[in-house]
Length: 109
Image (cartoon, rainbow, N blue to C red; front, top):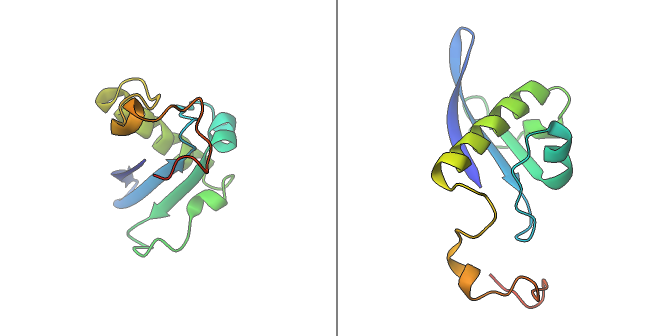
């Protein structure tokens, strides 16, 4: 999932993109940073200074810890408002894929 938010900073505005990636069978809505980091691949870009998304700020997790936490909280709030429970049941292919039997070789989405 990926979302764009303008994030106000003292003295000016910056546009950032925060994304977290996880496997289809591992939907999660992490609130703790350790859980976020352990269960997701993260991307965080400063689109004003890096419009081509070359420098992933999430690679330097410790230096960007507070910003990652803030963006994750915003993403969780947006998911709760738009989707509800983030368990994959909202996806259109949930009715024809038996995730209990699915393996990487059996599902080609």
